[in-house]
Each structure stands twice: as structure tokens, then as C-alpha cells.
Length: 177
Image 1 (cartoon, rainbow, N blue to C red):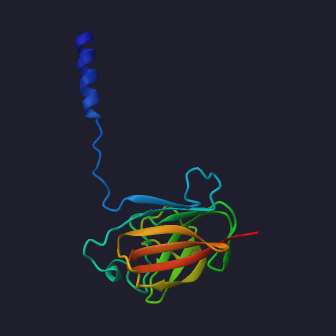
Image 2: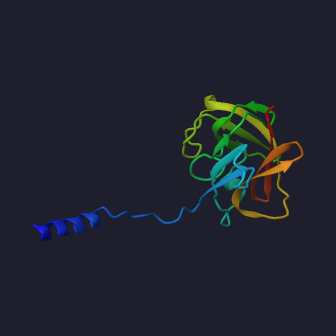
Image 3: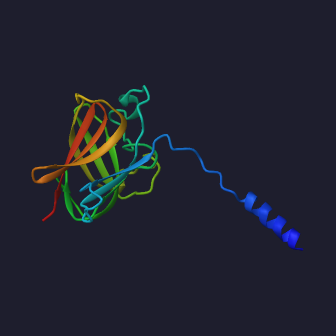
């Protein structure tokens, strides 16, 4: 009986062993402001997938005029921990999905309520909370292989900067008073 129980335990442990997949080709990343982990009072934080160019053109990965998931895999989720003015629009504290519509000289940045969605395949404009226009430049000195998002302090505001290849898109964020 003891031998049977030992055999059953060994066999069942082997039968339910996990098969873990390899590393994601577009790993998840987080950007926040303030960026220091020692600073507990965050204003904003975003989680997003970081696709790589891998010899491809930005214009084929994020085509002008088309809604883009702003990264890879799931649509990014941006959390504002306080009310803010995002690119000229007042936004209540909360979590939103972030999509974009790339353009040559400006991008449309979309905040909407349909969080936890894969890509932009099920995007419905009715879920928009705000749409803002942001200037885009494509003459950065340094090319970024991986899509990146960063927050920077600039005078009386924070800037969310999207960067990929030599393109940079900047959205001002002001903490509501």
C-alpha cells in the first residue's frame, strides 16, 4: 500500500508539471512618474509591450492613419493616480487603455475605457474618454530598436514621450489643482 501511494505521488507530480513558454518577443515594461521606486506618490504609470524593429519599418508596424495598440500584445494601460490634464483634456484619476493613430507630423492619442484588450482589434470609438493631438518628430539623433515610453519633468508639467526608431511623440501632462 505504501509503495502504491509513493508511486501515485511521484506519477501525479510528474503529470501536472508545468511547461513554461519562452521569453516574450515583445516584453512587458512599465514607465512611471516619478520614476524612482523610492517615491511612493506616483502621478502616472503605464504598462506596455515593447516590440522591436528587427529590420522592419516603423510605418509598416504602426501605419499612419490606423488605430495602433501603442506597443505590442495587450493595449497599454495607463493609470493616473490623481486628476490630470492630459494633452489639454481634463482626465479623472483611474486606469485607461491607450491607443494611438500615427501620423506624419502629429499623432492622435486615445484614452478609452476598454482596458484588458488584446491589441486594437476590438476597439470601439464609443469607449473613448479623450482624444488629443500630439506633435511627432522623426529626426531624433538616436534610433530606438525597441518601442519605448518615458516620462520627463518639463517646467510645470510632465511629458509622456513615445519613441521608436527616430520618431518621438510628446504629450504634456499637468497635475490638476
